[in-house]
Length: 415
Image 1 (spheres, rainbow, N blue to C red):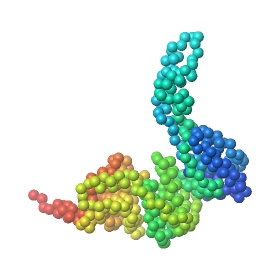
Image 2: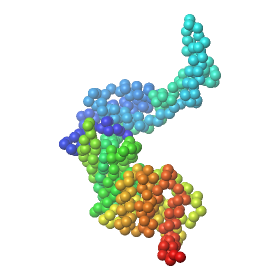
Image 3: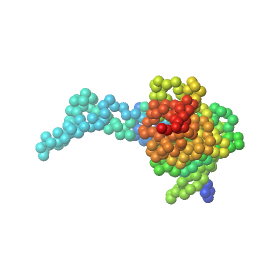
């Protein structure tokens, strides 16, 4: 993926946009792209340093330097580099340096240090050829990693990828992103909402005529995890592009010193819903641990939106069902803020009818008592890893029998 410094920007007052590759520059950039792709293909089996040198030999005009750097980044992203060594380089260096120190101490002031002899002795002790030891000593350095695989493409496809990646890179500077989406295909909506959950983004969703408005917090609005969150936000452009019609407006922190500007995009369907996304790792682990419990509750992935007209909605991760007909949902709040949790609290207090358990990390400093026990929505505050047993205990509280027992306990006369 591109970084923001590799994007071709155009600014008009308080609006910025990404500039497409000029028609006049396209022929020479296609040649440069072909040279970069050939450099990668020819460097398979060689070190990253050799690959970088081959890229540096590709001719490029001064006017095309930024695009060329972006193309090189995208070609590098298509390469797989590995450290090719049988023994850890740290251990090999320790053996060589220990022998080198001992050899130096044994010298008198008239003798010269024999590096070759030290390397040969160390190689013999390690059971390696001298050349193999020389190559493996610093194999853990990034430039020494070997290019073991390259995903080939065409120059035309590489230029097209660069232009699309510019739009994603712009979102790395976002403070806030608002997307209005029109779509009738339920599969497209499910993929979009699952992408939001999978990438653990901070979002709100409002129903609008013919679709929804999705508002996302940008990486520049966070105090931590900025880069990781920004990359996840940028990944959302693909499921958005799969929607029938969409319009995006983002507030960016742009330039030096940073100024708040607007970034606008809109489009129509580009591709289908894409591959089925897996559950986030922490949710998948919870499902596995829950399945190991002895319980009549069954769990599966949720496909529903829980909406309260005029107030808001939420997108649960899981739905739990009991043979007695009780159903309850679980939504795990990922990179979320305290403010986002309070919006969920307000949604329940305003009249959300479904049984929902909101799992919130203790780092957000929210008390489970924020939602009263007699409401259908509850908070589960966890430390580190969600407990399947505690989730089960909370689910039991949603069952009519449990609620009736609790009500009876509250109304029973004392004494």
